[in-house]
Image 1 (cartoon, helix red, strand yellow):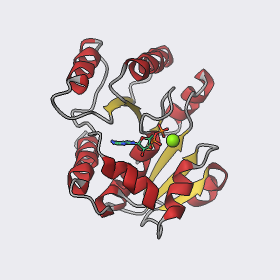
Image 2 (cartoon, protein in one colour; image 1 turned 90 degrees about the horizontal axis):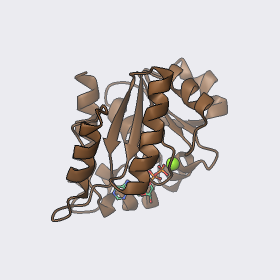
Image 3 (cartoon, protein in one colour; image 1 turned 60 degrees about the horizontal axis):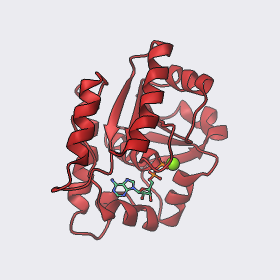
Image 4 (tube, protein in one colour; image 1 turned 90 degrees about the vertical axis):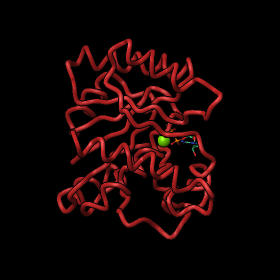
Length: 199
Ligand SMILES: Nc1ncnc2c1ncn2[C@@H]1O[C@H](COP(=O)(O)OP(=O)(O)O)[C@@H](O)[C@H]1O
Ligand SMILES: [Mg+2]
């Protein structure tokens, strides 16, 4: 399976999602994470720790490594051009569009989804990330907006948890972080993975 993360906006969890989807798929077979962001955030994340079970390579190395892996996850930079988006869609089985539940991010997401409609693609799903906990209603409100707009949306969503920032800082997967909510954080991405595998 080839999964790509993309969004018009930065800071919405593309790299965090790519890293954790790679960790999820690795449980099923050898997984390659292709770092398609010139900023190399995924590569730098992996180098801050002891490394991951999955392999992280640059876009330039992808052709060489791609054939020996069961799964590939591709992390991309913010602001893909229209042509880029077409290529991204053609190059994967599923495009994950992460969005945070705030106006700027949702607005950028609308642009992306409109473009997906122009491209005639159905191979994408929106993932709500960094959803603040109750009593804040941002997550529920964003979900309602997206469902009303008819966007394909993961039932699972990712909570806003400091464990994710610790993971990035220490070069770890969130499940490995020393934080009392690390397991909950990981369970959010597990739910996303299971939703993908169950179709
Ligand atoms: N669920 C989350 N909870 C808390 N912080 C998060 C979460 N997901 C991502 N972050 C943090 O938000 C910032 C942006 O995330 P990142 O995955 O790098 O986004 P992008 O790749 O879209 O720019 C990072 O500092 C990251 O640690
Ligand atoms: Mg990124």
